[in-house]
Image (cartoon, rainbow, N blue to C red; front, side):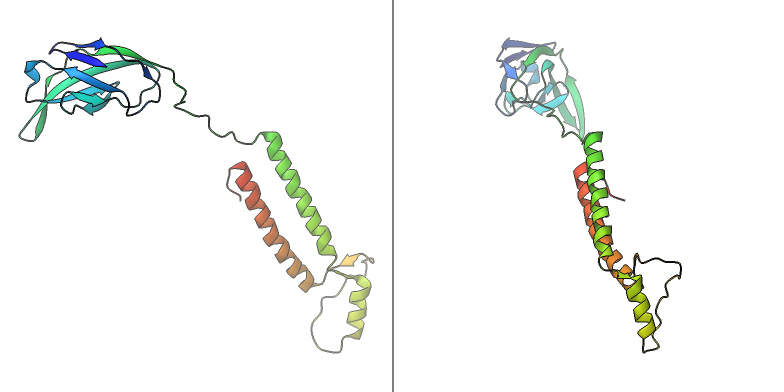
Length: 200
């Protein structure tokens, strides 16, 4: 793209099509007035400043739509930058390209998917409870052990009103609960990763 600059305005004299998302491929060449000699010249594309090298610069990546192309000249006095010339900018349009500046973000799981994860976790817990019952002693086995104990080791008693359902001993419950807890934490971590949140 060729651009002519005066101290009053910026004009595009030869336009080259620019597409959204292009970076480092579109060059602007400027014809500057004598008044700019010895000054630092900067091009501005919709507020994005690009210093000129010689009398040219490369456009930054631009979004589709209208672009204001401005040019200003500055000088540095005692470490302070002073704007000397700031002409009226020109305007051109950036057309749509194949690249999308804002690609679609990954979608979070829908509520129905989240409910499926919860159901899976519930079924997992139910399976663990069923598996835990296999390591329990029956009431009859506990009663037999109590009647035959030959040492002074303390053993938990069983309520006389209990039926012959499986009754866990303290050690069996502790060991199994610890194992289920560890496995459950792993399952919760997996669910948390799937739904993109932190597990409690």
